[in-house]
Image (cartoon, rainbow, N blue to C red; front, side, top):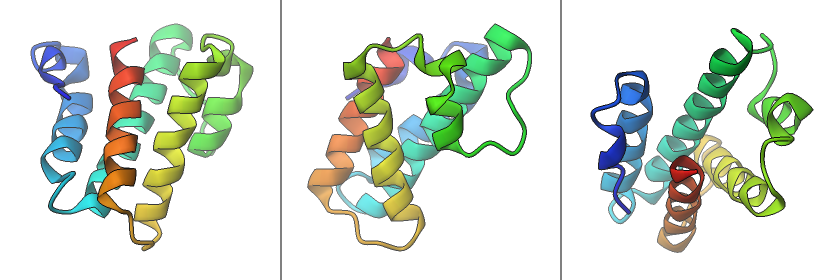
Length: 117
């Protein structure tokens, strides 16, 4: 994957940083890569809410933000599956579960698919 297309977009500097961290760690630290992918996803989802609605619902979990029709209605089933894959694998890494290289790569690929849309 390559997330360099985000690098020069001011509004996506934070998103690029998370994506880059995920990409750099995918083979050496898959759990960290998965967490960085999830952080990137959360940044992307919150950016969507801020751009579209001016704010995002405080206190909502990432799952709740994704499942809310204000967000999910903009995604087809395939893209929604990618989003949830990144969230689930990232949560595993964040909660101390071992994430395999294969899973971390899957999360990174799903993240790339989501971000490019």
